[in-house]
Length: 160
Image (cartoon, rainbow, N blue to C red; front, side, top):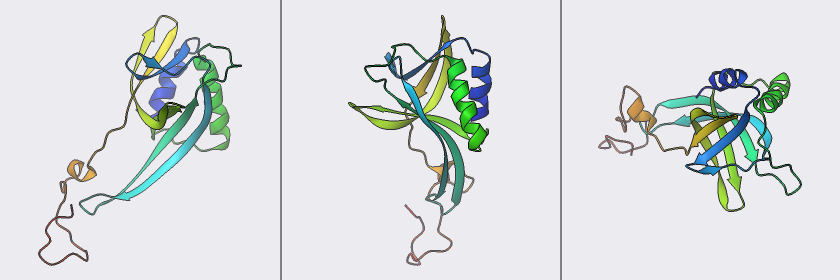
């Protein structure tokens, strides 16, 4: 989901409580913190030899401390944090948004936004774990297209 799409949807539900679900039935604990919002830039080359460039917006979520009130943050508060960030850091609205979450028993993962659901006074952001994709398959040349320039032997036809 694009950053601007999520922010637009959140803007329509400011009085709701914002809940993040990282697996079916598994939610980030009430009282969580948004510790950082960052721009991430990726520059890569796929298996077909094609360079790629993309941006992501990543919001980092952290479990509450024992001193925090066990209430889910309001959408309004999340949008306030986001606004403070964008006043100082140029967040790109067309970038995909991810939420990074981990706990003492779970490694930190940058989850994708799967769907948004209204559940009473909660707006639930259902996160999905990232998958591995082949950008070459998504490109017109296909996965593992022949190398044009490489140090491979003349008989090499594929890069992977």
